[in-house]
Amino acid sequence: MNVFIANIIDKHAFLREDECWHCYKVLRKKIGDEIVVIDGYGKIFSGTINFINEKKCEVELIKDLKSNELNNLHIHLAIAPTKQIDRIEWMLEKAVEIGLNEITFLKCKNSERVNIKPDRIQKIIESAVKQSLRAFIPKLNNLVDFEDFIKMNENFDNKLIAHCFDANKNALKLFDFKNTKTLICIGPEGDFTENEVNLAIKNNYKAISLGNTRLRTETAGLYAVQAIKILSE
Amino acid sequence: MNVFIANIIDKHAFLREDECWHCYKVLRKKIGDEIVVIDGYGKIFSGTINFINEKKCEVELIKDLKSNELNNLHIHLAIAPTKQIDRIEWMLEKAVEIGLNEITFLKCKNSERVNIKPDRIQKIIESAVKQSLRAFIPKLNNLVDFEDFIKMNENFDNKLIAHCFDANKNALKLFDFKNTKTLICIGPEGDFTENEVNLAIKNNYKAISLGNTRLRTETAGLYAVQAIKILSE
Image 1 (cartoon, chains in turn brown, cyan):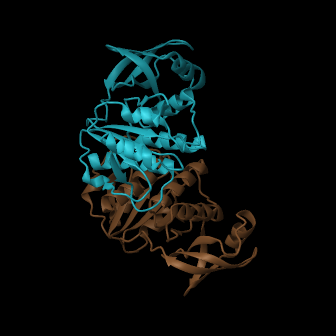
Image 2 (image 1 turned 120 degrees about the vertical axis):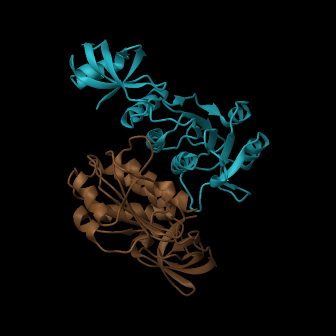
Image 3 (image 1 turned 135 degrees about the vertical axis):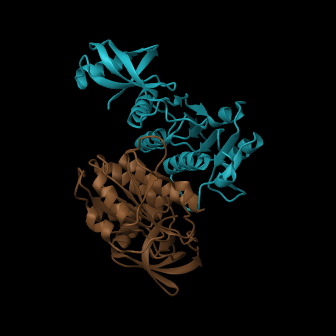
């Protein structure tokens, strides 16, 4: 079933303008066709199209499909974008399918890439949300300097940082992730510097280990998100 | 540190011929340079080059780096290749980095792709092994009909099958994966048929759930491998 992003008001949904184009022009949907709509904030319904053209599409809602994201886990991934941007894009698609809730891109000392295309990233996020029948659209934050990010005083149950050099590191399975707000930071290809890790630890981050093999940046990001998801269940 | 595949005999390693070419011609290594060698069966050493040309390279071993794969977990993934082969290749790279031990490609009723290029897949596997500093090269099996595969009488501690339709399914966290030999089957884009799932269950497979979102084939494969790895620790 095709899924579209919409404003949902009472018993009706109004597709976002770019979604109308896709629904009408690309998928050639017409009045009476059944589609699924999400608002990105937790609502998901099936319904039938009442009105459609390339700029406007109104849907009469039939059935509340209920969001499948019932627990209160919130996973925020902060990661340095990879030199080859397609690697991080693939990771993001998968992480969103699995249940990522928020992403921030980091500019670190060893970063080889210091820019991203937010519009393109947002499209990848929304496409993965629809693919996986999620009702929530993860939040995409602006690219930010690691040091500024680490000093932000937002409240988390767990603040974690993964790095590759020898040091005391905690196994992920020792944390309690159930119904938590958890932040995990993953460094660039050249890893975080020791200064960056020390700064994080001063700011109440815990260093963690992601298993016994050497993971690429994007594999580490996806592994961390999955591990937190699995261990929270 | 660059990693190469080699025959390891006593205190010496002899690089595989294609690895000699890469080492000598591409990376321009010379006598006295230090490299890492693996035999693909669990040995991993650092050493210095004694002799090198484009067809032969001998290494004197210095230090046993010991395999980081200490536990006896064996994960065998059997998966239908995706229509877009790059999706399954990306998954495989990540799964090998994380710790996959064996892979079989399946030909199912709903398969949209019924061929793979074993040479290309083998290269992806070996590249991921070296990237992640693993000492074992996962085994790549021939593409096989699902029905033939499911009837094979190989011994596993856990035989699992993931599918999307409503039925009794077991949560992964309820299994014991520690030091087990575990097989997990993932279907094609159109999912396994009910007949296929029933056949598996008749052959002592257990149906499992991979969480509450709808996953693409390649995401499901990677998710399953990671979940088994994490839950085995």
